[in-house]
Amino acid sequence: MKLVILDRDGVLNQDSANFIKNPNEWIAIPNSLEAVASLNQAGFRVAVATNQSGISRGLFDMATLSNIHDKMHRELAQVGGRIDAVFYCPHAADDHCDCRKPKTGMIMEIGRRFSAELNEVAAVGDALRDLQAFSDAGCQPILVRTGKGEETLIASQKDPEKALPPGTWVCADLNEAAQRIISEYT
Image 1: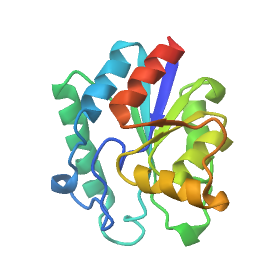
Image 2: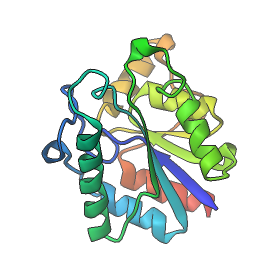
Image 3: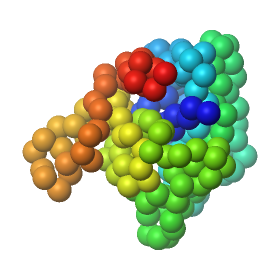
Image 4: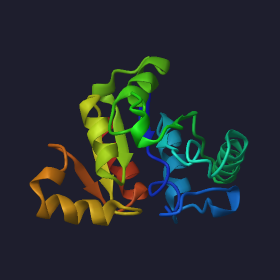
């Protein structure tokens, strides 16, 4: 079984400094849904791993998060794509949980649930914390330049403390990342 892990905000949909708090604010990045469909057609299962501290901050509740993900699933289905599972961390950074990226708990759980060898999994994010979690869990980290990605790349070039994990692939967007994953893993 082939598996790809995606961050949500900034990879699949437009990100917001004010959080995605309702389904109307969830707006797909151009070609991101088609990229998921192309991964599916190439035999990949796709899981989402997303930090959603807006829950612990009281900005939205679990029902609203579910409605946001329902919209994502509906829009994916319209282009022939699917997300096989959505994993999320509802905690704030000061909760010190094991699931919030850059910690690896959520990524390890995805590996267990899918019976996947994480060193055979490509994982796509737009923030350094995504890439750190993916790399530390053994995945192939991929930075997309959408969302916070361009800012992450610039910071990594200026500050050694913010360097990308070794071997990180850099792609323009999820579509380019999907094409590279398909060519490298099939």
